[in-house]
Image 1 (spheres, rainbow, N blue to C red):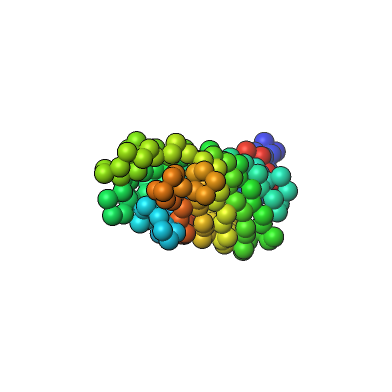
Image 2: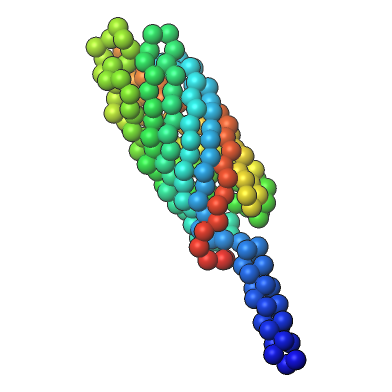
Length: 185
């Protein structure tokens, strides 16, 4: 009888420990998301869709630091070629409360891929990339982030090559799912 009581007590403690660990706030988070946007005026593309992948470490409950990448497909307008942007960026996030509003930015380098020329009638080379900036504002909870963003790859001093404007920038919205990893906070 004593052995049965000890077993039940042990199983109870183990169950309580597992339940607490699963509900505890995590410091390491993998974020997987999608986004879509319309390009900023005077661009060579009309819209974009993309996938985001990032890792975030919560330095404090209100501040996250990490790395971000993804793939954003830009659809050329008029006779301009489609192209893609693959970012390699530092992720910064500020969370004033455990659930609610947040602000942040991804800052780094955006690799531009696709056809070597801006359009099919041009000899102007497409840039290989440039400074990448993606500020965002959104709402977050334990599992999800819903956000609006401005994404831009700056190519050259004025964001253009010669007389050909090359615009790799969008204004859009997205959603990301948070996958907790690692130890609890």
